[in-house]
Image (cartoon, rainbow, N blue to C red; front, side, top):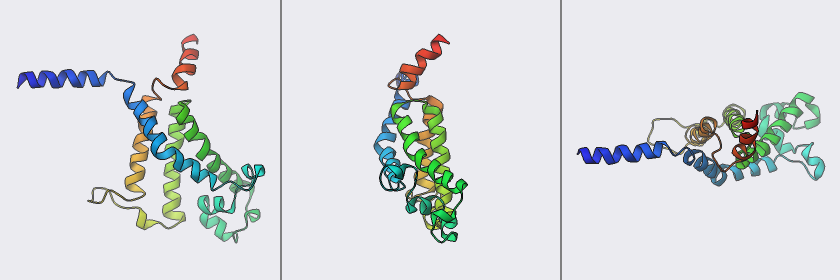
Length: 183
């Protein structure tokens, strides 16, 4: 039994020293599971042509500000500058934050931003779109609710990047690490 405990202790000690593994795996899983989701979601919010970068589609307003857009008669021009800025900010965040995580650049900041984005997205889904059915419950036998179950795992993945950083294969390490050493 002591031999088994010794092997276990050696293995777990070795694993605990592998600082590269968890952040690298977190970024890989983010790339495989969530990056395309956010990029495609962002694409649905862009207007037509190059000017669509600055003039979001009606779908962007429906997705981000559902009740406000409905109250405006589904007319984006009836909304103010604040609403336009919120929709543009949300749209750009869906592109910029995942891109930064994929590059491993300003990863901790981008992951904090993504956590905030996921929380706002979830609140918009629940209150703005009335998706109480998708809320689900924790500690039940069903692990497939779209909001509490799935997004809790998303936030855990992103929290790993906040705590551990991007890992060794990242621009944070290659570029910012060198700059920090000189400062």
